[in-house]
Image: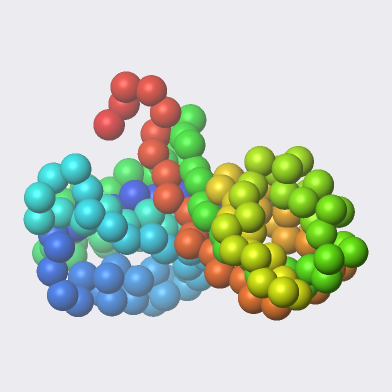
Length: 162
C-alpha cells in the first residue's frame, strides 16, 4: 500500500552526499516530495529530512541501500513514530487596499504573519504541517498568488526518543 513516509538521514557533511542520497531514491522509483538539509546537533554532520511516497517494502529496501552509502551514519523512518513535522511558506498575494482586510482575516485565522507590504501586494509567512500550508494557499488563491516559496518538511520524533 502506498503511503507517505518521512525519513531522517544523518550524513557526513561532505560534497556530493545530497546527490548520492537523492539519486538512490530516484533509482528505486521513489519520488522525493520534499527534502531539507541542514546542520545537525553534531559538528560535521548534516540531517536530511526526506518526504516520499511508496510502500513499506520499497522503503525498507531504500533504507538498506542508504546504509551502504559511505557518508550515511543513521537512517530513521520518522513516520513510523509520533512526530512533529513543519514547513514554512512565503506567499506573495495580490492585495489591493480594498481586499486587504479579508486577506488579513485569513492570515489571522492561520496564525500566520505579514512580513512585507507592497503597494499592491502582501507577503505572508506561514509555518505548520503540510496540510495547513496547503489549506492556506487554497484560501489565498482567489486573491491571486503572485509568488510562492516552500521550504519542504523538517521533522523530529516526539518526546525523549532520539
